[in-house]
Amino acid sequence: MRNRAISLAVFLAALGFVAVQAQQPATEPQLGDFRLRSLRYFLTQAPSYGAAGGQGWDRPGTLFRDWLRIEVQFETKLEWADDVKLVYYALLGRANEAKLFKGEVTHMHIAKGAQHHSGMFMHPNAVRRYGGGRVERVAVQLYYRDRLFDQLSDPASNQRWWELLTPQSEALLNPMQTPWAMLAFDHYEAIRQLPRTP
Image (cartoon, rainbow, N blue to C red; front, side):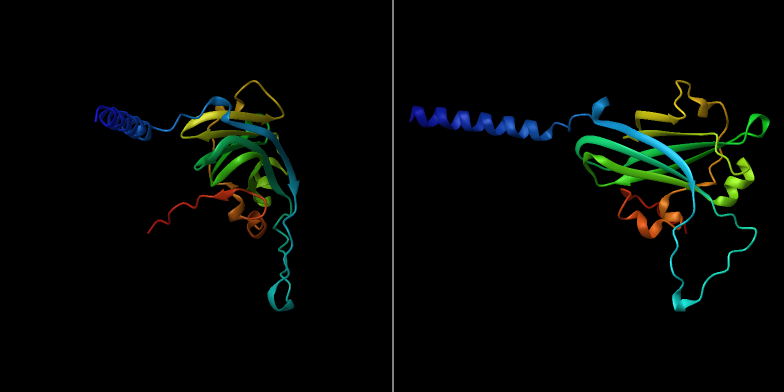
């Protein structure tokens, strides 16, 4: 009888320990759990898709061809992560003509690994209008749970140059807002879609 009482007490103590463990919050991510591996940017033409019915589209003479494309590769040590936000900056123009642009994209369903891709684009006419077809520099910051984990600049810089100007937010586009949308599913991480406003 006494052995049974001891066994029951041990069982209840173990059950209580498991319950307490289950109620404890998940461990906070550590600084090294996310890392930006590379950042690059270049001007490129949009992918060409055949027009339906075999009828081509005429490109207006006022529509320039070279899009700004910013590419980022990042890694995570977490098994899964949602709401991984990348904030992009692009500086176009020089001296008094310089303009800073900012864009954000939030990725979902990020699995553990080092081959994650994110991207941001700027329409050719915006590149021509604000930079005369040139981009001076770009930067990216990676946030998770509203905490900054990493940042990169190209060209490399120890200065947070993007904090020196007030950014404009209307010109940088995530892949789903560009001609790359059809290809984005096979290259970029899943993008959280913002709720539609009524």
